[in-house]
Structure formats: structure tokens, C-alpha cells
Amino acid sequence: MFTGEGLIGSPFVVTSNNGGHSPEAIAELCVNRLIQISDKAHPTLRDQAHAFRDQMLKVVVHYVKMAMEEDRATMCAKIREAGFPDLASNLRRL
Amino acid sequence: MAFTGNFMPTSFKSEILRGVHNFATGGNTFKLALYTNSASFTAATTAYTASNEVGNSGSYTAGGGTLTKAGVATSGTTAYTDFSDISFTSATITARGALIYNDTATGDPACAVLDFGSDKTSTSGTFTVQFPTPGATTAILRIA
Image 1 (cartoon, rainbow over the protein chains, first blue to last red):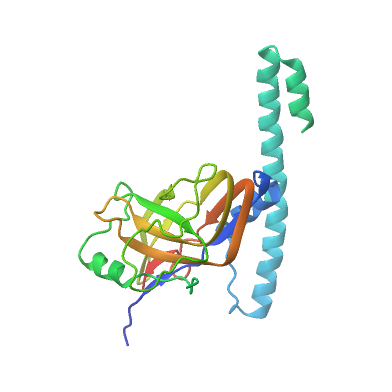
Image 2: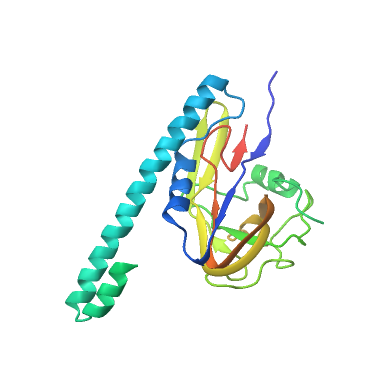
């Protein structure tokens, strides 16, 4: 039997207070797009998938933090070059 | 009336068959507007409305944000489309759901009503709506 229908996926909302998203929240967004685990999957496969997802999350958090630190280091260097060493130092300590 | 799950308005299904919407890259412009729990959307919803839309805050302004399309793809017998995540920054927002609508077509016709499941709040922060993984069983808009 052939069937046809229009379907809508479920959106995921992430919010932050008094600033932008944390590295952990951004990593969660990233991993959500990389892997989706069905509740209907075989329990053994589902457990393996969740374990893989947890490991993937740790790796992505690490590299998101590294990207932020490297970008901040570049910004500090530019600000220092522009003649604002104190501002550069304060930004580096964030 | 509160939000009652994610759905396509009936008018959208009709408009697909009449060629009103073009989700392809380079096609129409689609926007996402956020709403409070007081919004009243049903299958009979036909277009964007400012009624019960969240107020302007940070980068959120009336009418919502423009979505970045990822084009149209197929998997097996299912066709689907996807959008990039959308964020509103430096914003104080409490929203229960959203409406995706076509900002190019006359009358801003509605495409999809999204239910966040509960009120989501950002306070002087970032409010991000992430769309699900694009695929035959998960993508945000699918015709199976």
C-alpha cells in the first residue's frame, strides 16, 4: 500500500542568560546535527550510539574551547598591536 | 489556546500543489517568528500574524529572523528541506513556539507551526532554534 503525508521534525531550542552560549551548549548543538539516536533502536545499538555520542561531545567541547582561546589570542595580539596592552591583558584573562 | 504540537497548516499543503513555495537555494525567503503561549495556531492558520508575537529584543525584531535555506533533497521516497540554525542575540525572550512563513509570497503564507513543548527563555542572552538532522525521518519539513 502506498501512503503519503507531510511531516514536521522537532526543533531544539537552546537559550543563554547574560551572554552567549557556553562551549558545552555549542558542542551540544553540533553533536545534535551529527548524530541522532532513535528511541526505537535495538537496546545494544542504542547504548553504543549513546556512548559514542558522549565521547563525540567531549571531543567537540575540547575543540570549541580551543577555537575560542585561539580566536581570543588573535584578538589580544591585534589589540596590543593597536596600542591597548591593558585591554588586551584583561581580554586574555576572560 | 496554547500550542498543540508541530504541524503544517492546511493552506500550506494546498499552496505546495499550487507552486506557491520554493524551498530551493535561491528560491523564496522564509522567516521564523517567535510567539508566546497565548498564540492561537490551528490547522486553519494561513499566514504570519503579529498577534502574540514576542516583543522586539536584541537582534529579534517584529516578523522574526530570516532562515538560511539548505535546499531540497530526497532520501528513498521522501523529499525534505532543511534550514540552518537561527539565533537571536542579546535578547530577552520568552517563547513557546514559532511560525515558519514565506516572506516572498503575497500575504506571508504560513508553512509550519513549531511547538517548543514549554516556554523557553533567554535573558540578555542568545535564543537559538536548532532544526533537526536533515533526513527522511527527521528533517524539519518532509513529504513522505
